[in-house]
Length: 178
Image 1: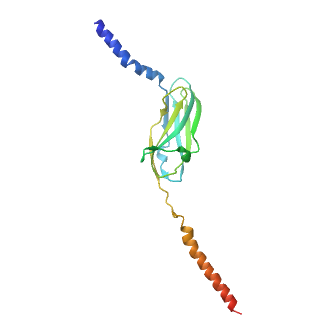
Image 2 (image 1 turned 90 degrees about the vertical axis):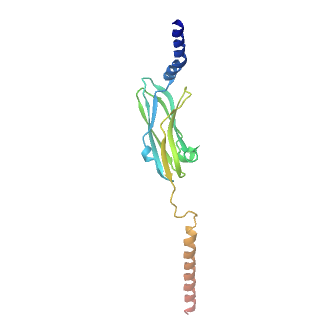
Image 3 (image 1 turned 180 degrees about the vertical axis):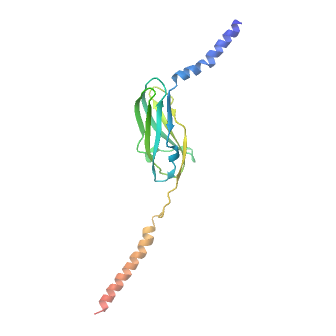
């Protein structure tokens, strides 16, 4: 009987204790993207990504920095946000207990394709970041009436030729009237 109790106690310590330790070290922050339905658009558009970070605990969390993570869903490659947003990360600093803090970024749709977006929070002293749910959105290609930049030449050259011929005819008519 003592051996069975000892085995049960050891099994509890091996399997259940790490779960309690993880729960104690888990961060009480939650991230959510609020503007997920407004993200799709056309290349060249500017949109605002709105999110919220909430401290669900009774303790203050210090040194919090949030940033966007953008991945091209077609190529499965991360996107360099330097072209998409001038705002890198948002340093929040301290989030009081039970406080909710709004987050906003302006992003510029650079290239068409399918993308996933998430908000990531890093807290100083913790090795694991907190990540929001993924938001899927599509950037449609920009409809360009002048894709090869040939429209000024295609329209400008005939207009200049017509103007030149009219000027030449005017000059000849004026010269031979006398």
